[in-house]
Length: 432
Image (cartoon, rainbow, N blue to C red):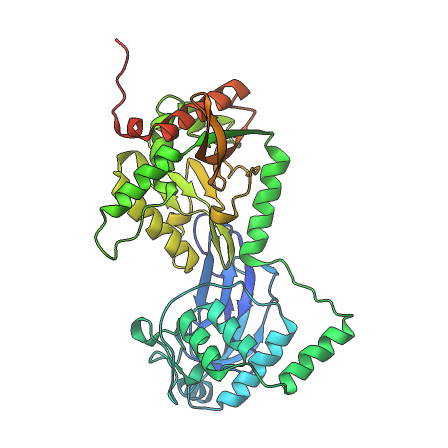
């Protein structure tokens, strides 16, 4: 019998430390090699860390929110024939004891934010686990199961390889109906009473990263905000016409790909807005390619997946790629590469868009364009009162590098394309 000290691994790209987001094991648990033991967060992405060996957990270091340096001890395993045998029988051996240990740990530690998935649930006496004993699901779904009192070992997942998806848990919870008041509910009520009807939520993981980046952007970037009213009546007519030509079952066009396509055309005349600021070198890096970040609300918080080389895509391809990257972000499947490298960002609150907003620049970019809600209202059009569809564009620019005049001129150029959408598809003709 011996001890194996597992240290925080090097997660690449110059990472020197990582934040603990959630532990998926606790002292006393038997784990199998390659079983996910902890989720950590770097400045780039969340990473699930598997066990390097089979054995029994002796001790762990760090609670959710703590940062552990690369190379520092993270978890200690007891290895050897006895511990390895216990680990090999993880799915069948003492699941109640293991669950109790994890539940106790969960009661002491905040849990990671949510992710999404899809599927149809079923209950099975066999665990949805790999050959190594690992239950196949995301850290967020493990949290959901703990909160709902669901034993993942009884859920047959509908995802690839039996992976348990979010919809499996949602449908199972709906089938079970509202939880009856019992020990768990009493414990929650007792905790609320003891805490004076308040609770504390530690800011960790993706939410911490969002908070840090938003604070840094507002602290370091002098935002120049510019809001313009756009008549999108013709754009709406074009959108409806395009949708009427789609095959049955094809996803409908929204304003977003049309606006992105118009933005790409506008940036041909305003390349100073398709720029990244390298603060370390004091250099503006102007890009010829347009990599559009699409601000996307997810269960984890705001993410910005990237539509790369938007200037090369047709409207149909642009719409399809926008749907693909945003859906991957919402379901927590986006890769690190899909969430970085944008040169300008578009954000939209959809039906909640309001009249105006002041979007925060996605550093190191220098511009962000926000879409507000499109509504029909009476306006003066060609000298007469008419009902037109109006949408505001709310934009922010880094005033250190984009002058107010240039920012306003860019939005006016974008407005012209959106109000006369046929021009979006006419190639630009250079002056002789």
